[in-house]
Amino acid sequence: MSASSSKRPAVAVVTPVYNGEDVLSTCIESVLAQTFGDFEYHIVNNCSTDGTRELAEAYARKDARIRVHNPTEFVDVTGSHNRALSIGAEGTDYVKCVDADDWLFPDCIARMVERMEAHPTMGMVCAYVLYGNRVAWDGLPYPSDFVSGREIGRKYFLDDIKAFGGPTASMLRSSVIRSQQPFYPEGRYNGDTESYLKLLQKHDFGFIHQVLTYKAGGENSRTTHRIRHLNPYAASNVEELVRYGRAYMSDEEYAGRLARELDGYYRFLAEIHVRRLGRDVWDYHQTQMQSLGMPISKARLARAVTAAIVDRLLNPKRTIEGILRPLFSSPSDGNGH
Image (tube, rainbow, N blue to C red; front, side, top):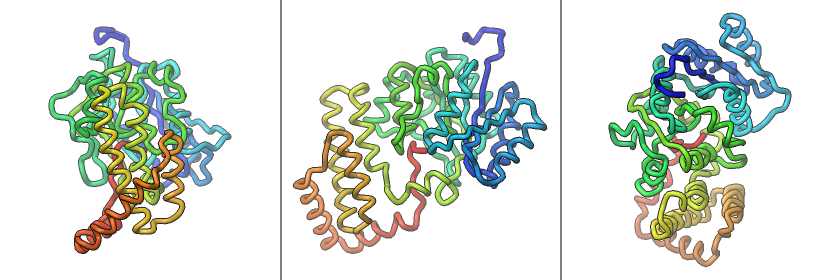
């Protein structure tokens, strides 16, 4: 659709939710308070066992834009998001997801639609996020309101610039969702980032330098807190690079980046052994690396473990601080769910 079209763009807002009775009202109210009011709102209830369904249906009776879906099959978090996106993408131009424990600032949809309408090649648009009590995903320099897909991918891998912050932070073009099914890859903790890296091989990227969404952080996040124990992001950094890095980097750039990522990853694996974090943590990471066709090297791991032990002996104060810090600080959600 061109920016000059007189037709109002069709926008769907979607909220996948499971047992969100205690947070869903704030989410819904933030959607209903949007300055861009011409949208359909799909609340997709994932077989909740609390009062989620009743709460959503009460809102639907008061506002005709709200449609409550109650599928009978329970699915995991990724499946729930994919189901909601597919529902929203039918017959619409854009889909805006907002997780049940997150919410939108009033101008969110209006600003994102405006940016997408101005750039037909743009597959997604994001903005700053208020993550708990801090502003996150603020690495893209101003103005950078339009960036080619290849360029933003290169910035992600080569400059560590994090510009896409998960489902609530982004708006997607519906045609992209329909062509990329399932949109989020199943069985990946960083599946949202991987889906964006796939999208950006064919489409461009937009960014709005304004806080437009709120994401629950730390203990308040239903998804972040649940995966904290495994630290899946250590493996996800390698997974993303192996699966998508060559699409954005030269062979030389890719080889250099992979070497650095693996060095850091083996230091992390050494910490699992030295700190005895549990067999489940080790099994998870071993499985992830095997799935990439890069089984963990026992010799390389042994060298990393030796280096970690020597570091503890030579730097006991730094070692203690390094152990205590992650126990008492909120984890960075990165670009994860």
